[in-house]
Image 1 (cartoon, rainbow, N blue to C red):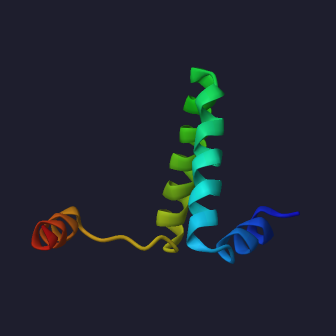
Image 2: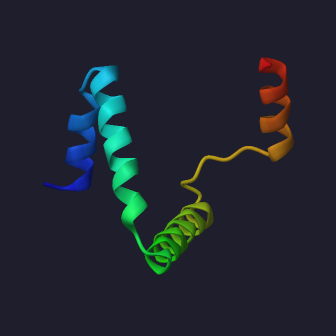
Length: 73
């Protein structure tokens, strides 16, 4: 099963089941070695940089994000 298919199926779950799944997935990352974590973050940073360069990453200026966050609290 492809990750996109798995994600689509997981999103069909009710909120309580999605939260349980998310908790179990996050907990499974606790056992990773520091170099594995570094590698995963480096890949994610590269993926986001590529998406930014390709113009497929939605983004907002930080000042807008912080302004909106302050308005909510």
